Length: 341
Image (cartoon, rainbow, N blue to C red; front, side, top):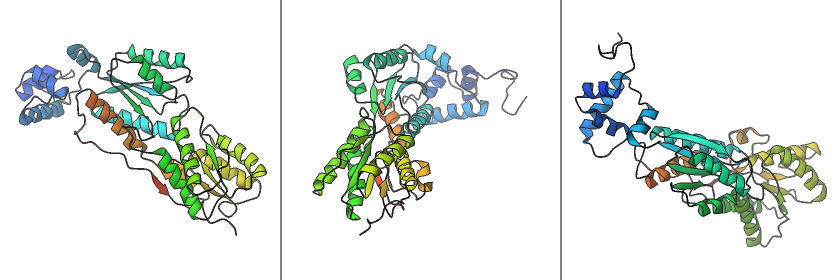
């Protein structure tokens, strides 16, 4: 036997009744502790947790679901195109959910067509989810969620200043453009994200608003797809036809592609063209030159989404603390400089 085995548990996994015997409580009390009940005295809960740790007891999720008539399952509806931001948010959602005793079931949209959205939501609902988190949805997803009137709490996680994010994409975009204006640029291009993405729309609005606030004429934004390949191809075309001195890209990967295009035609960043991105992906500090960009707290956004969903379910989860995501911040690096005189 190991140090944590008892004669009763030797050779088998410990059960909830073994925990109850060791803690000197009923198995119903152990169940309440496992399910994060607040109706117990702290010293009783502490005694049960100590017994759980000593026996290395792992609650069986299926058994818990049967005993409590709850699945403790959170559905996540992901976008049809995955970016660094959405991946980081989903990872944070999973971590926060797990620490609160929940599991995730994830489905990514094949398209943003209404039938596909409804089908994906039906797939999640058939798994008896207790709540739904929609991550960075396309614009047409939100009204469909409202229309369905789902019988479970729903959290929509975008980075547009919604309750779960506390971030204002338009303000972040304005900060990026303002930085270029303050350096002396007036001919500033914008490579935007896809037309149906909420974030892309708000960043484009920020670009237009800041150009207008400085009495500058905006160039027609180019609608992209978040990829470095598009940034490169758009860059080759724009550099051939436009006389701009700076570009604000809707995300860091399109900024990377654009910088590649600048070098491909024999020009340089930032001497000939200043470039600003958005998101501050981990690689941005290692682009050449390192990229000026707008940083957002994807982990904080995802964690807060779970906190808000659990509150809708009447739970606190984790240690009960509510952590606000950091606000968007402009990170100035070497890809921006005053234009040539």
